[in-house]
Image (cartoon, rainbow, N blue to C red; front, side, top):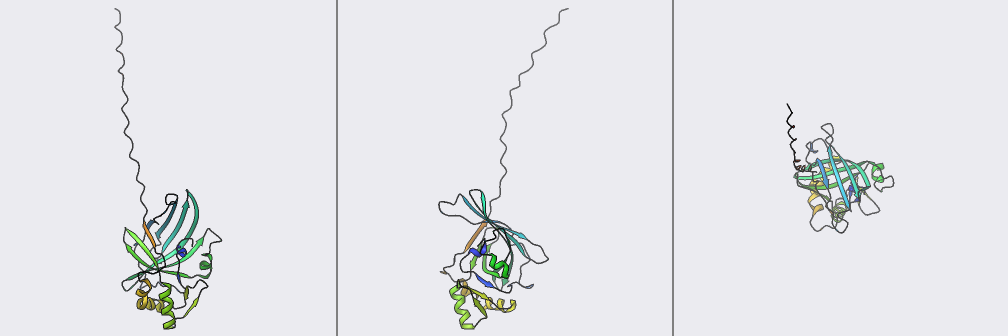
Length: 220
């Protein structure tokens, strides 16, 4: 996601949604807090968290909050609305930005235009989620061969102009070509955020009780 999902290189965009009532998943498969495993020398200083909150039965969407911190300070925040879509045996994430705190973020263009960002999803429930950008080389090749309706962005990634039903059929027919191994686009791996465990209270050493001195005998 640039502020989250759109930072993944080679995002394929759509002017129409991928999800529909009969394809959107209405469970909480992705619900929870997920972190991006960090590598390198700054791994201990940087954290990236994706919070997937289930929006409910009304629209079957997730509200996604992306928070990046460096040395304990928030440096990037983004808000997304996302739908988990099942086409055949494959899962996709249909995401669009809702709001941004970073006014100058390049993702503002997606927000203003209302474009949907498409990803293939592989997940082990409760263990990890992988968001795979669609392979630009393969998708551009199919677009040319099939004369698929689209416009091309300056970055070389297409914006698909297909209606929802046509878009679904396009991915059902060609989707496996777009996630072939060896693609250059980096996947986003998410793992469950470790839950904070309450510290076990330390047992207090019993205080030594000094018995009171017996009263002195009274003189008769």
